[in-house]
Length: 283
Ligand code: GUN
Image (cartoon, rainbow, N blue to C red; front, side):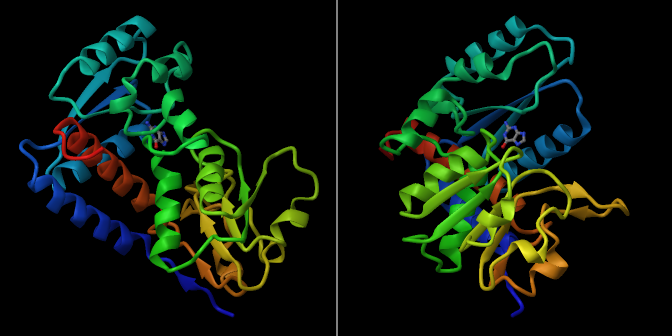
């Protein structure tokens, strides 16, 4: 079997187009404020890409650059002023933060109604209970990818490698809501293969280049690769050994062009929804 490619770039472009059309119907353009502390080069690229994507769909993007040495209080002051600004629909604090600032208390100070990253504990609580809050963008994007290929999670076994707050944990909740049976594995899980070989859907989110080998994958599985790594030649690659795994999987996401574009598309979607709510156009 040779896997069909899940074309995240095209699916994300469709979401961006729908977001753009909906944004044009609002009384004022949605606005996202992005805060970056320090000058982590990877974060700088992510922030630039997010701001560019916003502008392409008619979302006003404002960036706030704070020095790496900035105090927690300075960052909190910036967040508080954005919380109380009625023109601001979304607030995003790019992670990771410098060592002296703990991300937990920072994220909890973002107004949950502007938390378009879906990282606030209020939105996390909604995710595990009733749903309805902002969903974290990468997990929400993965669910959209599965919907786009017409794949139903109902009754399926989804196995997630990685238990991060950004991907593994929230994705498990979204997959549960779709009636999958979900297993979360991590660095302390013995005999990983025992789980991965039973996966109808296998999600790799552990940040290890080409970690998932063909002998870990069930014939006909859907394989979702969240990784962004460099291989031994410095070439961009995911957490999956795609060349070999694609001979066993039914569907697979490429890196680049799979999950990555969906994360940004869902951020734009969340910002639009926040603006719609603020303008009384959505619940
Ligand atoms: N750092 C890596 N991924 C993300 C993300 O989705 N949002 C934020 N704010 N920071 C990140």
